[in-house]
Image (cartoon, rainbow, N blue to C red; front, side, top):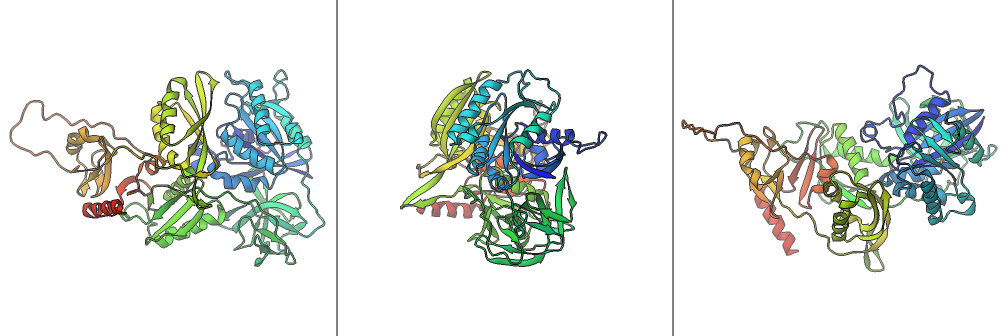
Length: 605
């Protein structure tokens, strides 16, 4: 059976996972009466909740005597480490673009990677039935994007389809009958070349993803570059410079059939398979026959741009909520993460019981923390720090391209706020529907913690997309958070009467009856300085009753923060305490005397 390997790349929310659902259904992979979850490829709980793809996944369908291996890639640049490796497994890409929004930053990021590998794109303009759709203009924008990304003539001569993944149709012309996705299947078979592989050469495969299976152990997935591998054949792992890592046997070979993996007897060149049996070989390394001495070239991985400190939870409430609290357990979990996620780096910190974790962005590290807390971990997380570089004696910092879509009335405040963060505007144009699209180049430092403020400034209607651009000379000081915080001065349970009396001082993050401890952050002060407050003070009971004073206390609804908002909010001398059920903010030094000593030494330095 002939093979076609194709990846679907698109911006977040443009509908690629929904399109894969349609392809699975219409290829007969599912029975007519089979119950299938919507967005079946987003199998991870976090992916379902957030509506985004975090991990690249593979599926396989049969169509007219061909086997189509379809890879669903993440759209966020934070998960770009996944994208780069995955694209090395495929021979063609479907660039899926929203008919109203047009090509967006993440489309640009992944498409650039695909063009660099010489892959020829198929452009699919999705949601073509949207009332605010502008398919013809979007097609021109796609062409301009490919020109800007230095596509060659062959890549610029791309076929175009209009589709609605939700309705399950794709057509070459919007006037055609809208029945099914057959046109897309036919185009993939015709336009995507068969894998350029040598079946007669010895077996060789580059590992592109890794996962743990409770029954089979580590499963290494990749595309077979050459040869044939049978179950129980001897194999060996090679690192990137061709040195042997280990000898083993292929205890199990699994291939994708629909959404499931099935055991197969042999893997042939060109197919995408998973191999069990190796214990040390990891991502970007090569599996080959015992005689093999040359590794397959692996794509270089873009360096991390942001780091955070993951430490044990040292608050007085530690160990009450989670069951994984020791530094050894945290270290083992982080080491397991870097085995399969090559875009994350973990180093030991100078401080005891803590580790410096570096990644592509706040979202990527936020997803790791969220995953760990769901597994029962308790952690203390520091404010994100940008990773600087030294080049020719100059300090260089990462710069990001920021594209915002906002209602016209809010464009002024967004331009002003990003200018304060040392951002420069490079483009501003109307994007239809009373919205304006503005493009900035802004240091990553300036964007830490800005998203929440951006949503407030645009009344929740703005959309912001970020993409790593380049390293530039250090841009100087950027102003931080303007307000101080309200800090608990004692330990116990918060009292409604005390909070009610303190509400004039600022906005609270907690309600009444909540466990608090000395040094915990209870709210935001409405002045620039920090203020220690007593949230445990109950009303003094007397035998005198005054009219109107004994009514029930009504508290303002506290401002609840998500994990990402909390991490972005804190300052350098603060931490986020993360447990399976709680997110608390706290000062790094809980004792007020320690805090004063630390701030004095900081001023002195």
